[in-house]
Image 1 (cartoon, rainbow, N blue to C red):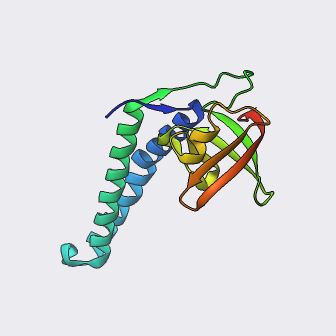
Image 2: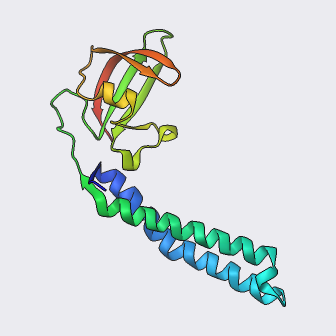
Length: 158
């Protein structure tokens, strides 16, 4: 795998999640497995025990994914004050077709989370906004159709 761009905030979020899963997550699952094993004479056939073991496997899988992502991560810092949208900056836009405003934080793929407003620079919208200045308009094809966006502001992320 190749190195992946990530902001300092994104790296901190992933590192915090990893630490929580390694400590609290593992402890909670181990306790659930112990409890399920102590309640039933044949723990291996217990649905609670099996469910806890499946959750343990999912937890260990997530830990492995986070460890791999953090090992590949390359921190990028925005070029603050240059007036163009960079990784790690917030871009406010207006949809020219419906007038609605949106805010996006441009991030690397490792930390993208559309529900939190963090979009990857490799996504159609993120890629179109990268390098834009306030006043620029972009037209981008998305899975939901073509978007026409006007860049209203480029700001540092608080």
